[in-house]
Length: 181
Length: 205
Image (cartoon, rainbow over all chains, first blue to last red; front, side, top):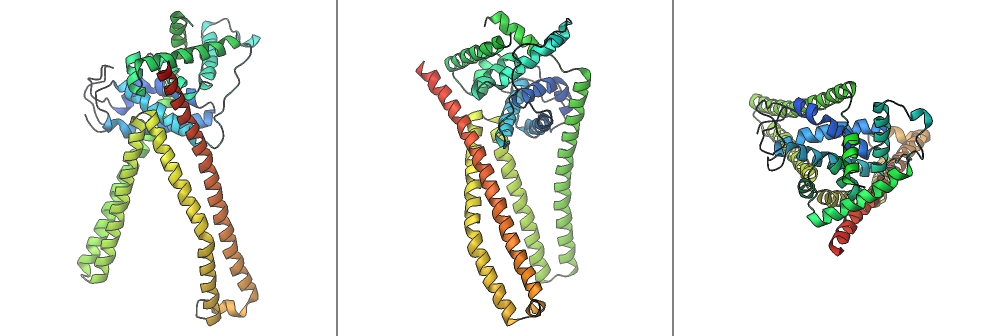
Protein backbone atom coordinates (compact mmCIF):
# COMPACT_ATOMS: atom_id res chain seq x y z
CA UNK A 1 0.00 0.00 0.00
CA UNK A 2 1.32 3.42 -0.85
CA UNK A 3 0.59 7.00 0.00
CA UNK A 4 -2.47 8.85 -1.25
CA UNK A 5 -2.49 9.76 -4.86
CA UNK A 6 1.07 8.61 -5.41
CA UNK A 7 0.60 4.91 -5.95
CA UNK A 8 1.03 3.70 -9.45
CA UNK A 9 1.11 -0.01 -8.89
CA UNK A 10 -1.91 -2.05 -9.77
CA UNK A 11 -5.60 -1.38 -9.47
CA UNK A 12 -8.30 -2.72 -7.26
CA UNK A 13 -10.22 -5.40 -9.05
CA UNK A 14 -13.12 -5.38 -6.63
CA UNK A 15 -11.96 -8.57 -4.96
CA UNK A 16 -10.16 -6.82 -2.17
CA UNK A 17 -6.77 -8.15 -3.24
CA UNK A 18 -5.59 -5.13 -5.20
CA UNK A 19 -3.39 -2.22 -4.23
CA UNK A 20 -4.60 1.36 -4.04
CA UNK A 21 -4.72 3.04 -7.43
CA UNK A 22 -3.84 6.74 -7.77
CA UNK A 23 -6.49 9.12 -6.48
CA UNK A 24 -7.23 10.37 -10.00
CA UNK A 25 -7.99 6.81 -11.07
CA UNK A 26 -10.23 6.30 -8.04
CA UNK A 27 -12.18 9.41 -9.01
CA UNK A 28 -12.49 8.19 -12.59
CA UNK A 29 -13.64 4.73 -11.45
CA UNK A 30 -15.81 5.65 -8.48
CA UNK A 31 -16.76 9.29 -9.19
CA UNK A 32 -20.18 8.14 -10.36
CA UNK A 33 -20.74 6.10 -7.19
CA UNK A 34 -19.71 9.06 -5.00
CA UNK A 35 -21.88 11.45 -6.98
CA UNK A 36 -24.95 9.18 -6.71
CA UNK A 37 -24.48 8.69 -2.96
CA UNK A 38 -24.19 12.47 -2.51
CA UNK A 39 -27.33 12.94 -4.60
CA UNK A 40 -29.28 10.45 -2.51
CA UNK A 41 -28.54 12.41 0.67
CA UNK A 42 -28.61 16.03 -0.44
CA UNK A 43 -31.12 17.54 -2.87
CA UNK A 44 -29.82 21.10 -2.80
CA UNK A 45 -27.28 21.43 -5.67
CA UNK A 46 -25.00 23.89 -3.85
CA UNK A 47 -24.89 21.84 -0.68
CA UNK A 48 -24.48 18.69 -2.76
CA UNK A 49 -21.39 20.16 -4.40
CA UNK A 50 -20.03 20.85 -0.92
CA UNK A 51 -20.89 17.32 0.20
CA UNK A 52 -19.24 15.77 -2.86
CA UNK A 53 -16.05 17.69 -2.13
CA UNK A 54 -16.18 16.58 1.50
CA UNK A 55 -16.55 12.96 0.37
CA UNK A 56 -13.55 13.28 -1.94
CA UNK A 57 -11.52 14.74 0.91
CA UNK A 58 -12.70 11.98 3.28
CA UNK A 59 -11.74 9.32 0.74
CA UNK A 60 -8.36 10.98 0.17
CA UNK A 61 -7.71 11.15 3.93
CA UNK A 62 -8.88 7.65 4.72
CA UNK A 63 -7.17 5.82 1.86
CA UNK A 64 -4.02 5.04 3.91
CA UNK A 65 -6.21 3.17 6.42
CA UNK A 66 -7.66 0.97 3.67
CA UNK A 67 -6.87 -2.66 4.31
CA UNK A 68 -7.59 -4.99 1.44
CA UNK A 69 -9.94 -7.18 3.48
CA UNK A 70 -12.81 -5.69 1.48
CA UNK A 71 -12.98 -4.27 -2.01
CA UNK A 72 -11.99 -0.67 -2.57
CA UNK A 73 -15.49 0.00 -3.90
CA UNK A 74 -16.97 -1.22 -0.59
CA UNK A 75 -14.53 0.93 1.36
CA UNK A 76 -15.34 4.04 -0.70
CA UNK A 77 -19.09 3.46 -0.45
CA UNK A 78 -18.83 3.16 3.33
CA UNK A 79 -16.79 6.36 3.67
CA UNK A 80 -19.15 8.19 1.30
CA UNK A 81 -22.25 7.07 3.22
CA UNK A 82 -20.81 7.95 6.61
CA UNK A 83 -19.64 11.37 5.41
CA UNK A 84 -23.05 12.02 3.86
CA UNK A 85 -24.87 11.13 7.06
CA UNK A 86 -22.66 13.35 9.20
CA UNK A 87 -23.08 16.11 6.60
CA UNK A 88 -26.87 16.07 6.69
CA UNK A 89 -26.97 15.99 10.50
CA UNK A 90 -24.89 19.15 10.59
CA UNK A 91 -27.33 21.10 8.47
CA UNK A 92 -29.41 23.38 10.69
CA UNK A 93 -32.45 23.00 8.51
CA UNK A 94 -34.10 19.68 7.76
CA UNK A 95 -32.63 17.94 4.71
CA UNK A 96 -34.60 19.16 1.74
CA UNK A 97 -36.99 16.52 0.54
CA UNK A 98 -38.41 17.56 -2.75
CA UNK A 99 -41.90 16.43 -3.46
CA UNK A 100 -42.16 13.50 -5.77
CA UNK A 101 -44.12 14.64 -8.79
CA UNK A 102 -47.62 13.21 -8.56
CA UNK A 103 -47.72 12.59 -12.27
CA UNK A 104 -45.02 12.99 -14.81
CA UNK A 105 -45.67 16.20 -16.66
CA UNK A 106 -46.76 15.85 -20.26
CA UNK A 107 -43.79 17.81 -21.53
CA UNK A 108 -41.51 15.57 -19.51
CA UNK A 109 -42.72 12.48 -21.32
CA UNK A 110 -40.01 12.67 -23.86
CA UNK A 111 -40.20 9.84 -26.39
CA UNK A 112 -36.48 9.40 -26.26
CA UNK A 113 -35.42 6.69 -23.90
CA UNK A 114 -32.61 8.75 -22.43
CA UNK A 115 -34.98 11.50 -21.36
CA UNK A 116 -37.36 8.97 -19.82
CA UNK A 117 -34.54 7.36 -17.96
CA UNK A 118 -33.44 10.72 -16.67
CA UNK A 119 -36.92 11.41 -15.40
CA UNK A 120 -37.20 7.96 -13.85
CA UNK A 121 -33.88 8.49 -12.17
CA UNK A 122 -35.01 11.78 -10.67
CA UNK A 123 -38.13 10.14 -9.28
CA UNK A 124 -36.10 7.23 -7.93
CA UNK A 125 -33.64 9.63 -6.27
CA UNK A 126 -36.43 11.62 -4.63
CA UNK A 127 -38.09 8.45 -3.40
CA UNK A 128 -34.79 7.19 -1.99
CA UNK A 129 -34.23 10.45 -0.11
CA UNK A 130 -37.56 9.99 1.62
CA UNK A 131 -36.69 6.60 3.06
CA UNK A 132 -35.68 6.36 6.74
CA UNK A 133 -31.90 6.37 7.01
CA UNK A 134 -31.28 2.66 7.75
CA UNK A 135 -33.51 1.63 4.84
CA UNK A 136 -32.01 4.27 2.57
CA UNK A 137 -28.51 2.97 3.23
CA UNK A 138 -29.51 -0.57 2.33
CA UNK A 139 -31.41 0.33 -0.81
CA UNK A 140 -28.62 2.58 -2.11
CA UNK A 141 -26.11 -0.23 -1.69
CA UNK A 142 -28.42 -2.72 -3.39
CA UNK A 143 -29.00 -0.31 -6.28
CA UNK A 144 -25.24 0.14 -6.52
CA UNK A 145 -24.95 -3.61 -7.03
CA UNK A 146 -23.26 -4.68 -3.79
CA UNK A 147 -23.86 -8.27 -2.74
CA UNK A 148 -25.89 -8.97 0.39
CA UNK A 149 -22.75 -10.29 2.08
CA UNK A 150 -20.90 -7.06 1.33
CA UNK A 151 -23.80 -4.94 2.57
CA UNK A 152 -24.10 -6.98 5.75
CA UNK A 153 -20.41 -6.53 6.40
CA UNK A 154 -20.46 -2.84 5.58
CA UNK A 155 -23.39 -2.09 7.87
CA UNK A 156 -22.44 -4.71 10.45
CA UNK A 157 -25.83 -6.42 10.45
CA UNK A 158 -26.82 -10.08 10.40
CA UNK A 159 -28.20 -11.58 7.15
CA UNK A 160 -31.74 -11.98 8.52
CA UNK A 161 -31.80 -8.41 9.81
CA UNK A 162 -30.53 -7.23 6.44
CA UNK A 163 -33.17 -9.22 4.60
CA UNK A 164 -35.90 -7.66 6.76
CA UNK A 165 -34.56 -4.17 6.40
CA UNK A 166 -34.28 -4.60 2.65
CA UNK A 167 -37.78 -5.99 2.41
CA UNK A 168 -39.16 -2.98 4.29
CA UNK A 169 -37.12 -0.62 2.15
CA UNK A 170 -38.38 -2.24 -1.04
CA UNK A 171 -41.97 -2.03 0.10
CA UNK A 172 -41.62 1.63 1.03
CA UNK A 173 -39.84 2.44 -2.23
CA UNK A 174 -42.38 0.54 -4.29
CA UNK A 175 -45.23 2.38 -2.63
CA UNK A 176 -43.59 5.77 -3.27
CA UNK A 177 -42.81 4.93 -6.88
CA UNK A 178 -46.36 3.71 -7.47
CA UNK A 179 -47.71 7.06 -6.29
CA UNK A 180 -45.91 8.70 -9.18
CA UNK A 181 -47.51 6.50 -11.83
CA UNK B 1 -41.43 -5.40 -6.24
CA UNK B 2 -40.01 -8.25 -8.26
CA UNK B 3 -36.31 -8.88 -8.74
CA UNK B 4 -36.87 -7.93 -12.35
CA UNK B 5 -38.06 -4.50 -11.18
CA UNK B 6 -35.01 -4.20 -8.97
CA UNK B 7 -32.76 -5.06 -11.90
CA UNK B 8 -34.37 -2.33 -13.93
CA UNK B 9 -34.09 0.16 -11.06
CA UNK B 10 -30.44 -0.74 -10.68
CA UNK B 11 -29.98 0.01 -14.35
CA UNK B 12 -31.75 3.35 -14.02
CA UNK B 13 -29.84 4.21 -10.85
CA UNK B 14 -26.40 3.38 -12.16
CA UNK B 15 -26.44 5.63 -15.19
CA UNK B 16 -23.00 7.10 -15.41
CA UNK B 17 -22.73 10.87 -15.21
CA UNK B 18 -22.26 12.43 -18.64
CA UNK B 19 -18.75 13.32 -19.81
CA UNK B 20 -19.15 16.95 -18.74
CA UNK B 21 -20.31 15.98 -15.25
CA UNK B 22 -17.51 13.43 -14.92
CA UNK B 23 -14.97 16.05 -15.95
CA UNK B 24 -16.39 18.45 -13.35
CA UNK B 25 -16.18 15.75 -10.68
CA UNK B 26 -12.57 15.03 -11.61
CA UNK B 27 -11.68 18.72 -11.50
CA UNK B 28 -13.38 19.07 -8.14
CA UNK B 29 -11.60 16.01 -6.71
CA UNK B 30 -8.24 17.15 -8.05
CA UNK B 31 -8.74 20.56 -6.40
CA UNK B 32 -9.68 18.90 -3.09
CA UNK B 33 -6.62 16.63 -3.18
CA UNK B 34 -4.38 19.54 -4.15
CA UNK B 35 -5.68 21.67 -1.26
CA UNK B 36 -5.19 18.80 1.19
CA UNK B 37 -1.62 18.26 -0.05
CA UNK B 38 -0.85 21.99 0.24
CA UNK B 39 -2.31 22.08 3.76
CA UNK B 40 -0.07 19.18 4.73
CA UNK B 41 3.00 20.87 3.21
CA UNK B 42 2.08 24.14 4.92
CA UNK B 43 1.82 22.39 8.31
CA UNK B 44 5.23 20.84 7.81
CA UNK B 45 6.76 24.11 6.58
CA UNK B 46 5.36 26.05 9.56
CA UNK B 47 6.77 23.50 12.01
CA UNK B 48 10.15 23.58 10.26
CA UNK B 49 10.17 27.39 10.21
CA UNK B 50 9.39 27.71 13.92
CA UNK B 51 12.06 25.15 14.77
CA UNK B 52 14.67 26.93 12.63
CA UNK B 53 13.83 30.35 14.14
CA UNK B 54 14.08 28.94 17.66
CA UNK B 55 17.40 27.24 16.93
CA UNK B 56 18.84 30.40 15.35
CA UNK B 57 17.64 32.56 18.27
CA UNK B 58 19.06 30.26 20.91
CA UNK B 59 22.26 29.80 18.94
CA UNK B 60 22.81 33.56 18.50
CA UNK B 61 21.89 34.50 22.10
CA UNK B 62 22.40 31.51 24.34
CA UNK B 63 20.39 32.89 27.24
CA UNK B 64 17.60 31.54 29.36
CA UNK B 65 14.76 33.74 27.99
CA UNK B 66 15.05 32.81 24.29
CA UNK B 67 15.52 29.21 25.31
CA UNK B 68 12.35 29.23 27.40
CA UNK B 69 10.34 31.13 24.80
CA UNK B 70 11.57 28.91 21.99
CA UNK B 71 10.96 25.77 24.01
CA UNK B 72 7.41 26.95 24.75
CA UNK B 73 6.81 27.71 21.05
CA UNK B 74 7.97 24.23 20.04
CA UNK B 75 5.88 22.62 22.78
CA UNK B 76 2.79 24.53 21.66
CA UNK B 77 3.46 23.45 18.07
CA UNK B 78 3.90 19.82 19.10
CA UNK B 79 0.75 19.89 21.24
CA UNK B 80 -1.22 21.44 18.38
CA UNK B 81 0.06 18.79 15.95
CA UNK B 82 -0.75 16.00 18.40
CA UNK B 83 -4.27 17.35 18.84
CA UNK B 84 -4.77 17.64 15.09
CA UNK B 85 -3.63 14.06 14.62
CA UNK B 86 -5.86 12.83 17.41
CA UNK B 87 -8.88 14.65 15.92
CA UNK B 88 -8.06 13.26 12.48
CA UNK B 89 -7.79 9.73 13.92
CA UNK B 90 -11.20 10.04 15.61
CA UNK B 91 -12.72 11.40 12.41
CA UNK B 92 -11.16 8.61 10.39
CA UNK B 93 -12.49 6.00 12.77
CA UNK B 94 -15.94 7.47 12.33
CA UNK B 95 -15.65 7.45 8.56
CA UNK B 96 -14.44 3.90 8.19
CA UNK B 97 -16.45 2.31 11.02
CA UNK B 98 -20.11 1.42 11.14
CA UNK B 99 -22.73 4.16 10.87
CA UNK B 100 -24.02 3.48 14.38
CA UNK B 101 -20.53 3.88 15.84
CA UNK B 102 -20.20 7.11 13.91
CA UNK B 103 -23.53 8.34 15.24
CA UNK B 104 -22.49 7.44 18.81
CA UNK B 105 -19.23 9.33 18.38
CA UNK B 106 -21.00 12.33 16.91
CA UNK B 107 -23.52 12.36 19.79
CA UNK B 108 -20.69 12.25 22.30
CA UNK B 109 -18.88 15.08 20.50
CA UNK B 110 -21.91 17.34 20.29
CA UNK B 111 -22.87 16.68 23.93
CA UNK B 112 -19.37 17.73 24.98
CA UNK B 113 -19.60 20.88 22.87
CA UNK B 114 -22.98 21.82 24.32
CA UNK B 115 -21.72 21.22 27.87
CA UNK B 116 -18.65 23.34 27.19
CA UNK B 117 -20.70 26.17 25.71
CA UNK B 118 -23.14 26.10 28.64
CA UNK B 119 -20.29 26.30 31.15
CA UNK B 120 -18.76 29.19 29.21
CA UNK B 121 -22.10 30.95 29.16
CA UNK B 122 -22.47 30.54 32.92
CA UNK B 123 -18.92 31.75 33.48
CA UNK B 124 -19.39 34.90 31.42
CA UNK B 125 -21.34 36.92 34.01
CA UNK B 126 -18.93 36.45 36.95
CA UNK B 127 -15.92 36.88 34.66
CA UNK B 128 -17.22 40.14 33.25
CA UNK B 129 -18.21 41.35 36.71
CA UNK B 130 -14.73 40.73 38.08
CA UNK B 131 -13.16 42.32 34.99
CA UNK B 132 -15.48 45.32 35.30
CA UNK B 133 -14.74 45.82 39.01
CA UNK B 134 -11.05 45.45 38.37
CA UNK B 135 -11.14 47.95 35.53
CA UNK B 136 -13.31 50.39 37.53
CA UNK B 137 -10.81 50.27 40.40
CA UNK B 138 -7.96 50.72 37.96
CA UNK B 139 -9.65 53.78 36.46
CA UNK B 140 -10.27 55.30 39.90
CA UNK B 141 -6.77 54.68 41.15
CA UNK B 142 -5.57 55.89 37.80
CA UNK B 143 -2.55 54.81 35.86
CA UNK B 144 -1.17 55.74 32.48
CA UNK B 145 -3.48 53.27 30.73
CA UNK B 146 -6.75 54.64 32.13
CA UNK B 147 -5.72 58.29 32.52
CA UNK B 148 -7.80 59.61 29.59
CA UNK B 149 -10.93 57.88 30.90
CA UNK B 150 -10.88 59.86 34.16
CA UNK B 151 -11.38 63.24 32.56
CA UNK B 152 -13.85 62.29 29.82
CA UNK B 153 -17.37 61.05 30.61
CA UNK B 154 -17.89 60.33 26.89
CA UNK B 155 -14.85 58.07 26.74
CA UNK B 156 -16.04 56.30 29.89
CA UNK B 157 -19.43 55.81 28.30
CA UNK B 158 -17.86 54.45 25.11
CA UNK B 159 -15.61 52.21 27.14
CA UNK B 160 -18.56 50.84 29.10
CA UNK B 161 -20.62 50.50 25.91
CA UNK B 162 -17.82 48.58 24.22
CA UNK B 163 -17.62 46.11 27.07
CA UNK B 164 -21.40 45.70 27.20
CA UNK B 165 -21.58 45.11 23.44
CA UNK B 166 -18.82 42.52 23.69
CA UNK B 167 -20.66 40.83 26.56
CA UNK B 168 -23.96 40.76 24.68
CA UNK B 169 -22.24 39.58 21.49
CA UNK B 170 -20.55 36.71 23.29
CA UNK B 171 -23.80 35.65 24.98
CA UNK B 172 -25.65 35.70 21.65
CA UNK B 173 -22.92 33.71 19.86
CA UNK B 174 -22.88 31.09 22.62
CA UNK B 175 -26.67 30.89 22.82
CA UNK B 176 -26.86 30.35 19.05
CA UNK B 177 -24.14 27.71 19.21
CA UNK B 178 -26.04 25.89 21.96
CA UNK B 179 -29.28 26.03 19.97
CA UNK B 180 -27.52 24.74 16.85
CA UNK B 181 -25.90 21.99 18.92
CA UNK B 182 -29.25 20.97 20.40
CA UNK B 183 -30.79 20.68 16.95
CA UNK B 184 -27.90 18.58 15.72
CA UNK B 185 -28.15 16.42 18.83
CA UNK B 186 -31.88 15.91 18.26
CA UNK B 187 -31.27 14.81 14.70
CA UNK B 188 -28.41 12.50 15.65
CA UNK B 189 -30.43 10.96 18.48
CA UNK B 190 -33.39 10.45 16.20
CA UNK B 191 -31.18 8.76 13.61
CA UNK B 192 -29.65 6.49 16.24
CA UNK B 193 -33.13 5.64 17.50
CA UNK B 194 -34.17 4.79 13.98
CA UNK B 195 -31.24 2.34 13.75
CA UNK B 196 -32.10 0.82 17.12
CA UNK B 197 -35.71 0.34 16.06
CA UNK B 198 -34.52 -1.43 12.91
CA UNK B 199 -32.33 -3.70 15.03
CA UNK B 200 -35.16 -4.47 17.43
CA UNK B 201 -37.44 -5.11 14.51
CA UNK B 202 -34.87 -7.48 12.98
CA UNK B 203 -34.39 -9.37 16.24
CA UNK B 204 -38.13 -9.63 16.99
CA UNK B 205 -38.92 -11.13 13.63
